[in-house]
Figure: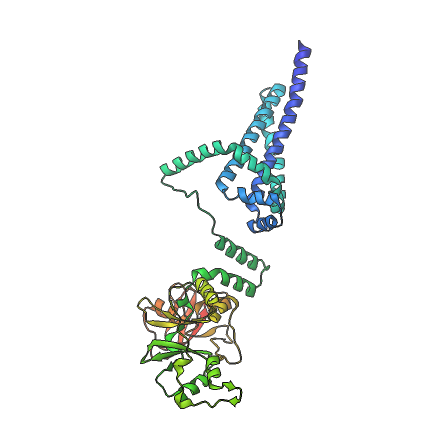
Length: 434
């Protein structure tokens, strides 16, 4: 009888140890899978999928429902850990008596911490995509197998949260643009992405959130020609202008009736026949015969949409109007591109220094300079949600039209008005406060 009990305990002991070993492996699998699947980059997994990796494809599929994934992993991990601990406790109690509970607690805590938590998670965090595509097929099976239990548990959780007044959206997803922007900013802070590259990448991501009103050329700065002017005067004005496209108005500047392109004007004034150059009669020249139909857009159009419209229409120039149809300004395809890559200048552009650094480290800026351009140039974070220009920001914060010499402190800067013309602020000195 004693021999039979000893053999039974012996066999049970070795079987229990093998069972504990197997359960620790499963615990390590669930812990490492959780880290790998949550830390892996979906962009890299997508790239692996495009190259034919079935594991990466499966990883992408199961990570679309993070709640089911995490629920499955937590359920599996807790089941195997509790089962392993209970089995170990039974074995140690049969050998050491009541002291076996303490021994089992200490030993299993160390084994789970080292071999089922730290070791697999350390590997997974250093090789997230590789680990994710390896574990994805088996995790997908567990997600399917545990789905009834997970669904039941999720319902209980939702009921408990609703009783506390908290609501959750099961369809809520992480905003891809915010995730990408955060990653770019993080890599820039770590030195992996240069400032100019960061600005270009963030500029592309900002296009859907910005409207043409923010970057358009205001109507007070638009160069126009009057359709009723003398043809010679119109031609001279077009030749002196640095712009290739000039709006044409009739009676008043709100009534834009066409857009004159320099190339169309050149073709009209210098046509060639088979017998030689035709004589151009400027006195009978009708500007409207070479003018293009104006293209109007609302001021609330996003830059992303407008850039696609420009490309679709094969256009480069649009006039911006408000909700009443009144002219607000104009925008070009170049203006939108400049929001991505920075200022573009050519040999015909008028070079205007909108910001000048002083010897004491301060900055003198043109009142019409955009807040966004200033922030990009100096890595500042002045708010641009209430105003587009530095002058507009000062007026908004001060709630008045300032005078020369007046100083304001807000947003961590001192703004000193240096130059002004009527109600227009021309020059502002910015001093960054400690």
